[in-house]
Length: 321
Image (tube, rainbow, N blue to C red):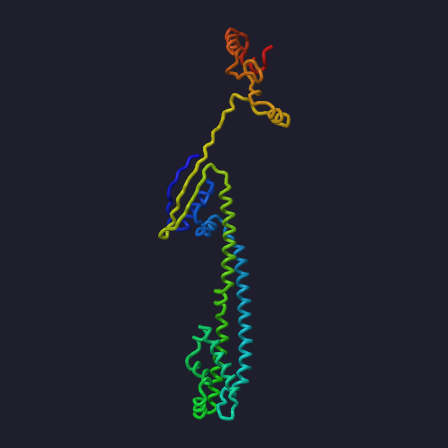
């Protein structure tokens, strides 16, 4: 087997893929090194891109994202409904700062509001979307009692209205944030699982393509080792060429055919079927080694019958009695 190697340089992965597909038409292809970065281009130029499979996978992923969005939306609406009921029941306790008020009720109400604000702060995007006046108004009940008394003396019951309006604006922003939650769904576990499934589909089809290229019956074997350097594809190529030696069977008869001939040939040596064209003896000697060849030729030369020199040929094929 003859071997030669050389280096091929390609401007990009598309040119490399085109070249490999053309070579695969007449060569047995074997890939070494990291071939994964080129698998998409190779599949597309080889006509093996799994379009339908990937389309179904994409549709399934979109359905999963849509269902996840609906779940987030339903959970948010349910959460807002619960918060509305909860804060409606503790509004009076939050602003009860006179001496006759029960301090334990106000303490529990303040802790509930403090926990809600902390929950908002944990969502960076939602908290950033709330303007400063709303944040200020929302945290009014968290002030100390003497500060709350001053606010109530200055603004009266309007303080409750300002706080309630701020709370409603926060609820509205919570609903609006759900509309952008699709982006969060796409960057979460769903998106990762989709990427893995897509990669597996492509890899499976690519492995099948490599098996096809590697099992081709061809005299030339091509071993390629691609590598990306400075945006270009450098490919080390090794070409192996098979050399086949043919043995001449000119001096031997055709091999027997049929059930009888196959069995006979299996029991006898191939030399047993050599037939001398001079004396018609089977399996003794070849035409060139015939001891009677000189005698037959001399007789043919002396004979001047009707057949002339053709007598020798007649004896060869019809035999001599």
